[in-house]
Length: 615
Ligand code: ADP
Ligand code: MG
Image: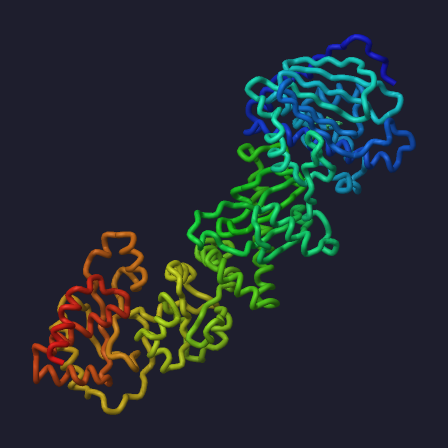
């Protein structure tokens, strides 16, 4: 038993303390509000210790108390008070725990429990500086306490954080600690009920013991991610999701998992129902929160997940993280990187399983969020291959509303097919109606359909799958096998003459004219061989007003010698050269329209009326 202390005893803080206090107060934490989190965590730790002790100890002081945390604010007196009915402290413990900055009582306690029980202890504090964060906001701090040991006296520890503290008797204390923070004038916000509620909800919403603020319970949602899946009901998950992500709808997908190696991780991840970026709202911010033992470290950690996973919501909790270190000072980057790698891999695996086990749901997911997977496939080198497998496309062989993976496409490829073909266009109808598909259809070659502006870029970056090159079907370089000649078309000589006439008439507007191997039903098509890549890319450049796109477009024109329009044009060359010129120009413009390359339609409209006059 410690001798009763009649008059206040003064103690000097440990030698290094002034310096350390200075660091804690001025630079360790970026936000003052953190002190609430730290004091709540300490109270929770103390209650956790009490829970353990009550199992083994027969006699405990004041043993009818609830294991709860009571916080009160007084905006007149400008104080913040936090009381727990935990284990409290003896005089020796006050000196040791609150007089020595680098000492962590919690750490010693965990050690005493023995290695095996470490997790059971569920303790938050590990680093022994949290308590001192109170001095960021305090003029003075008083710790009223009574140890769980019957024979110890009630005590009060007092300090203004400036180098020394006092301890004196304080008869009549309850078990545990009551910490009264007398706030600095500029920190009076922390004596406001609403402000403290906000902070507790932000950082300490999942602490296992009840937290009452001015008599009202604040934390009502459980830290679901730490419980075993089998005991969690669907509604619990939904409720948790809505609470945590501020969404009013249920989530679309959920992944709850834990891992022990290489890091201890408990994660609960959700995909929301809607992709708000797609709705034109602003770019999503990372919003999977990072916790250490139920206590928030960072609600928007930037590097926890790759950029393309910014649509995920939920929680990652790792015991291996240093809680007390704020995000700017988070030194152990490599720890976060490791977390990133493990979680990302696990989530990709989850999607892969979903795509096999629940293909319909996977497609629903893909329609909303596929664009993020594409972004990852195009930009995230580490996960590129895994993500490419997850991509889905409409194709010339899938029914409307169905889609295919690249692996399935490859499995359908004929023996001679070397490349994977795709076409970019606004929708299925317009691609099917355009001239580009016919040649592939006639040869039974499957073509993937891409509808999004980013697809061009994605396909270019992904480049290949399973050793097969991804090739735009409307690119001039694509060579298709010979088809049997259609009866009744123009002969070789007539075709040559027509090609030559077109070259001459169209002049600068074309870089080449030739008889096509890919046309079946259409008279002509325009192929882009220039530096803008595809028509789609050109449209994007134009929208962005890149200089190059202002130059008039030059295309390769391919004609279909079997088509009635070409046969007619061929005869006009002799009978009515003036009319032939109009038709030739019009054929090119029509091809440009199909390709989405006609920049200005006014000349075309004028010409069309001229043609109509003679019709
Ligand atoms: P940590 O929590 O990382 O150990 P702190 O600086 O937050 O470091 O606290 C230092 C020590 O003070 C704790 O380890 C604990 O032994 C003691 N302590 C702080 N708050 C309380 C409390 N409310 N009840 C009992 N002991 C406490
Ligand atoms: Mg602590």
